[in-house]
Amino acid sequence: MTKLRAAITGVHGYVPDYVLTNQELETLVDTNDEWITSRTGIKERRILKGEDVGTSVIGVESAKGLLEKTNTDPAEIDLIIFATITPDLVFPATANIVGAQIGAVNAFGYDLQAACSGFIYGLTTGAKFIESGVYKKVMVIGADKMSSIINYQDRTTCIIFGDGGGAVLLEPAEDGYGIIDSIHKSDGNGEPYLHMKAGGSREPATVETVNAMKHYVFQEGKTVFKFAVENMADFAVKIMDRNNLHSDDVAWLVPHQANKRIVDATSNRMGIGQEKVLMNIERYGNTTAGTIPLLLWDYEKQFKKGDNMIIAAFGGGFTWGAIYTKWAYDAS
Ligand code: UT7
Image 1 (cartoon, rainbow, N blue to C red):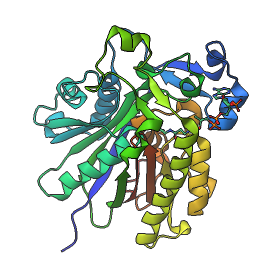
Image 2 (image 1 turned 180 degrees about the horizontal axis):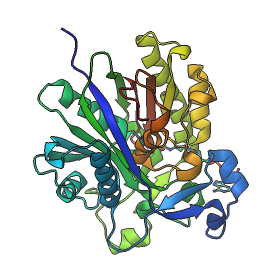
Image 3 (image 1 turned 60 degrees about the horizontal axis):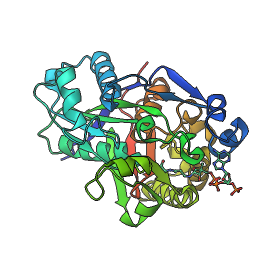
Image 4 (image 1 turned 90 degrees about the vertical axis):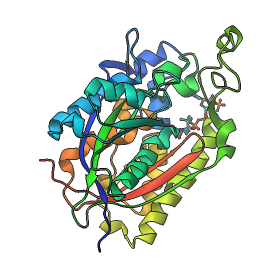
């Protein structure tokens, strides 16, 4: 009997209208376009402006677009997994806020927190529900409103992050297509290098924590960079090896967009040419759990049914992993 697999059968994304350029950042902190471009590859990022708008806005817009383009009745959705580190509220889950707004009346949902690896963790988890044979339509959303936890006086972080995300639909796959393999890892020893200091149960929010600016992203960039380059490339190569894939067999590398230099190091280790590497960091920056669905959305029309794709990510935690999928449809 052939193994039941899950395939991505549609993707849709959303980015807010406001464009925060490197030039505008030059007016906020001591930085310049040349430094940001050469060190990260980023030219601009999107910011979700307005009162009372959380990450669910990105999720709802992505989910609605996805339902429309895949001609799916929201009542058919069995499960919504929402990967994010910037939920609307500590609880309830943003997945449920989205579910209510899109009319997913028969779904259960939960949030998943694995920082920049959140979407790939969600994809693997969602695929397992499909592979069980019990669930037929799983929506995996990856989105973050990073501007809600970024200090725009800290030049080491504010130049990197942006807001945005997207959603995919997972359904049982035709023979041979869909998610074939995945490997993931996390290492809590990475905590000191990338975290938010307060606002959790260890140090709840107080006037003092706010005044001490403990509710923003803290990152020791150089250390994170070193671990990202090593681990993302290691896992991308490992998943190729254990599926007997040579670089010629891989049609696309879909890498988390943290830094162009990390992506270049990964594709070099894999022996993959630039023409096969999906990139949009120059327009959106690092949207944390949002980068991979945004890439799939941007490039969807170029994918062909049967294309071998390696999706790879590294992020806070530390968390990392790689997924091998055979693309299941021609969008055009
Ligand atoms: O997605 C989640 C995981 N996160 C990542 O993967 C991010 C990984 N890290 C990185 O991408 C890079 O480390 C950064 C982009 C954050 C920083 O690049 P870097 O090449 O590692 O720079 P650095 O931290 O070593 O700083 C080099 C210099 C320093 O000055 P000195 O000490 O050499 O005089 C910094 O103070 O650049 C300075 N600097 C800046 N200069 C202009 C730091 N930030 C800026 C800035 N503009 N925005």
